Length: 209
Image (cartoon, rainbow, N blue to C red; front, side):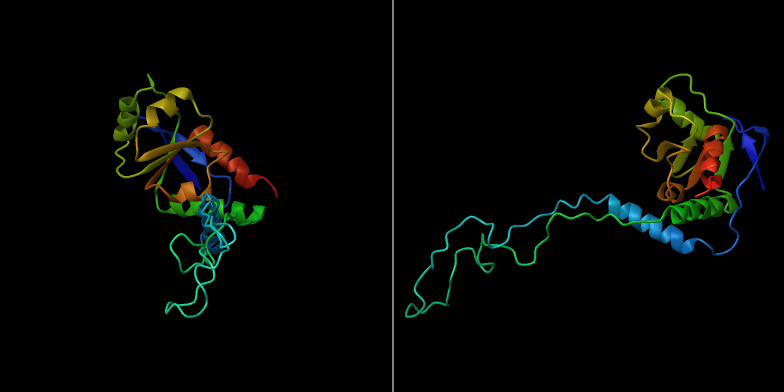
């Protein structure tokens, strides 16, 4: 399979041969699901914490005698039934990360990018050159490509100019071919790869596990 390479102005700049095997069938759907679930789980801080009966401040003194008061029995000021008491079965700090094998992650990457390529949602740019680290320069680049909706830009190496120019554009994000993950491949409406970014991404898919 070959992909058309474009310039920032939208003109043709040749073709790029896709060296990895594009997945045509349903293979890899479960791998994508597992990888995205693991990614979102790993983003959770897991810091929710409540105090048990043994941890809340208070005395062990019995609030009132067992019988004869007309009130219900009570044995502690720290009871979960009382305001300020402990929490029964409340959350404690925990690690939400899930293990995904390397081969599964690689299959998920290949499946995700294959689906975006088949849908015509991948654009290959020869390179990205901005005259200044200005937001309007980056917006002008997207406007020249007639892209609506969210955009993911994958480059070979991050430059300070590109990072500063894109950081205030809420509908776009910039990453590299070496670090882009399955979730980021699926998130935006359009994917822009520079030639260098796509080649580095390909190297990850061609690398033997």
